Image 1: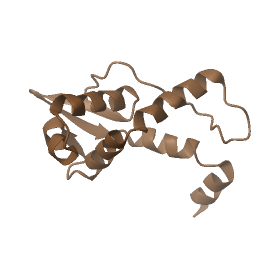
Image 2: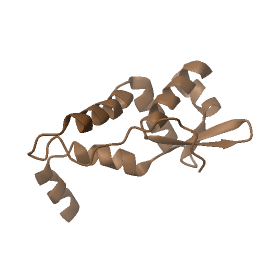
Image 3: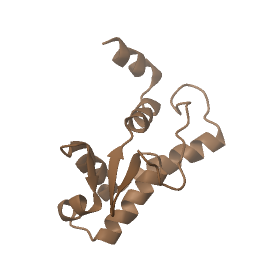
Image 4: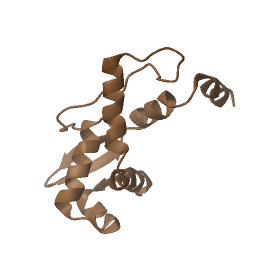
Length: 123
């Protein structure tokens, strides 16, 4: 997919729950990603895109279910894309958005205490 998002916020590899202090730069990157998802409309966008039949959606697919205007939906999609949670593919005049599964999994892993992570993987 063609990535036309501008800035990506990298998710740190060290969990703040790993038992050791997280470095300031890593905490700032993680806070940026968490800030991107800390909005009800953005959480709904992630859910709507993931549950779409092809696992992708355009702005026009998302405005009615959210009840928001096209510029507002585009704004939220841009924030999620810049945070590295969505990837954007331009096809003609339309842009389609798809989740970045590894980014979503990384957030979940970062927020899962190490003991729970080990138990989860064994199952």
